[in-house]
Image (cartoon, rainbow, N blue to C red; front, top):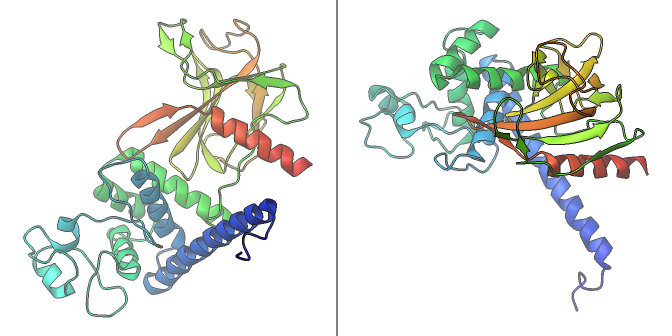
Length: 325
């Protein structure tokens, strides 16, 4: 009989999750070490490189055309970008040869080779891409637009960078349930339900029913991307997080004082209050019972689409209740 078979099931579960936690923490520490190393080498602030790396992790998880990359660097360069279109070398090669064929791969660790699978070379190359036009925020945005071609991508990367910079860490995965647990509320999965106002459409979110004035809280670390009126959602707030996810809070009765577009928030920050606004011109209210409509939208580098937030909401509620007990 092995030592593992003699342990209670609860102990085995605890050991497993502890090992997973340690492994995840080690991976984050390893990534951070690479970011800081490249900051020392290139003087590019670490959070820009970390933001691009996180963005690439986000899109490879939802794009079949981008290969997964294990290890501390998730950044993927096309072969033509790295080595040059006509370069016969398929993997590693000398920087001089890469340059001859118009490639942009760099040797970051001084071993005489530029390897797209070597984290040192990958991060060093991306640092050169980002600083192509200079080191100011405006310069970085210009370089990102030149590389990715999409304003949406530039905005997402800059959002991640701003959050990393503000909190001085890449560990920003905590969440909060959008309503304080001390208030009465109810919700169920309403994903895909039919909606008739404004034309036939499906319900892209979860409705959380509560009384007027119950505080509505940010569920994640993020930046307030939108605040204002929408004829469907009424008074609403939109928050963008580090995982390319847009969190949509609608039908509010009003906003918390001081909440503005561009503001950085963290889990639990009050952004507004439950209401019944929407389905009409600005100020329309009372066409349905008070509730919070909560939606989640994922950006994959090309498109943004809605997905069912109910599983996340249920998980966040349970996790928060366990912390209180």
